[in-house]
Image 1 (cartoon, rainbow, N blue to C red):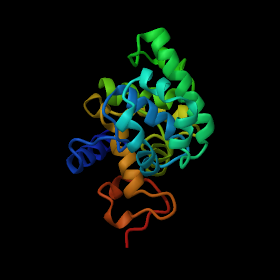
Image 2 (cartoon, one colour):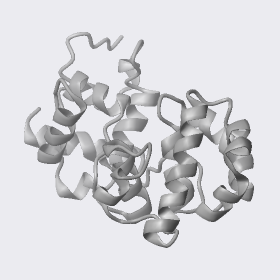
Image 3 (tube, rainbow, N blue to C red):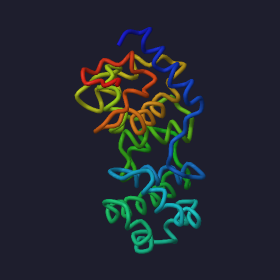
Image 4 (cartoon, one colour):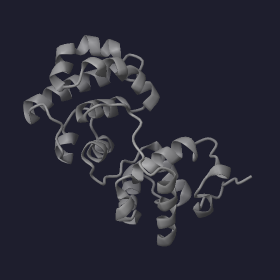
Length: 211
């Protein structure tokens, strides 16, 4: 995609959603971290249903430890891979207290050293909790980047690197939110809604359907 088209692409997405936000419900950085860890291979809707009662009583790492593994496991049992995720959440909570005085660190390496936290999760936390212009590449961002020709790549890492190069600085803060929401509601995996797509004319997909 040409540089001018990339600018137009994001100008349109910004006009459509001037202040995009992630759809995982949370009240603080710790709850966000937990929610993102739980969201792996799960939908935001499903995670929000499970975390609503959890976050009503747990707002800090210490409160999570006080809740305990057994009750946490029971609370999130509707989420895929819930047993392993529960263990990771308990352990990362312990490490936050042990290493970071109970606070979520604003540091990629420190975040990725926590159980269940990979690069994507760290990017989401750094972006949403701390306002850093990171780009988290999930399945939606990966699909939209490849399908439209915005930032094609065979791996998540390749797509992220390409997006870092092509997305202008003024759009970097919200870029992954725009791409996620566009992929979730318009440029869907099985049946993209090309007819209502605001960037259809910029899209390089050979399978584009406009009628």
